[in-house]
Length: 314
Ligand code: PGA
Image (cartoon, rainbow, N blue to C red; front, side, top):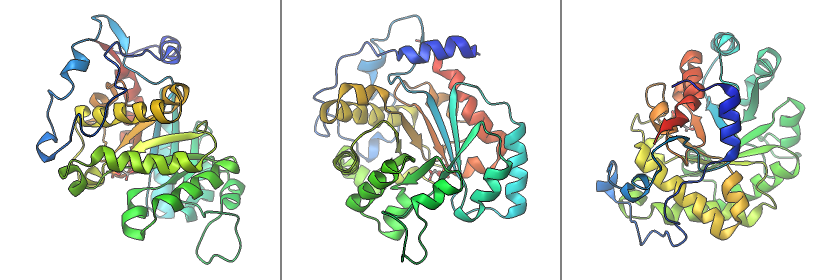
C-alpha cells in the first residue's frame, strides 16, 4: 500500500517501538544460529505474535530509511553514464537517504552528473591523513571530490584484502573526525554461522567500531552476512531481522538507548528488486546496502522505494 510522504515521514520519525518483550538478555547462547536455521519462519514467533493488530510503520529505530548502492569494482565511463541517466530520471520516494558508491576513479564523473538527491560514498578510505601511502586515497581527497560517505569494513576488504577489526575501527574514527559519514559493515562467514557464532562475530566487529568512535551520529551499520554477498542467497527476512534486533540490543546495552534507536541498521547481501519489499517490512531493517542490483538504475529505484512496504497491517 502506498504511503504519502508526509504521513510516512511523520510516522517514521515517531520511531514506533515493538510491543514485544525486551531483549536485554539476548545472547548467542539464548538463540544460537546454526546451519539449519537459514530459513526458519518460526524463529521470532514470540515477537510477531505480540504485535498490535492495526496499521503500523514497521520500524523499531527512529532513523530515516537508507539505501546505498555499492558499485564495487564495476563499470566504465560509458556504462556509468547510462546508469547515471537512469538514476537521474528515476522516481525516488522522498523519505529515503540514497547514496551510491562508485569506484574511486569515477567519483568525479558521477559527482558532476548525478542529481543532488543522491549522495556519494567512497568504498574505502585511508586510516589517517594522506601522504606517502602508495595506492591509497585519503578522506581529505574524498571530501574534495564531494563524497559525503565512506563504506568501511566491507567483507571483501576484511576477507580478501585482510583488514582487521582494529584497523577498520581506526579508519571509521578518522573518517568521522573529518566529517564523512561511515557505512560500517559487519557480518559473519558461512562457517561462523554454521558454528553458531553469528552473534559473537557481529558483536565483536561492532565493538571494534564502538571502541574507536567518539560518536554514532554519523554511522550507519550494514549487516551483511558474507554467505549472502554476491551469491544470490539472500537472508530470509526473519534471519536478517533476528540479527538486526540483536545488534540494536547490543547498542542499547553497550552504547545507549538513544544510539540504539537512532542508528540505522541496514541489510546487505543479494538484495534485489524482488526481495527488498519483504525485507523492508521487518521492523529493525532500516534500509539496504546493495551490490549487484545497484548497477541497474530502475531496479535500484525499486529497492529505494521499498520503503513504502514498511507500512504494513500487523
Ligand atoms: P550484493 O552485494 O548485493 O551483490 O550481494 C552487497 C554488498 O556487498 O554490499
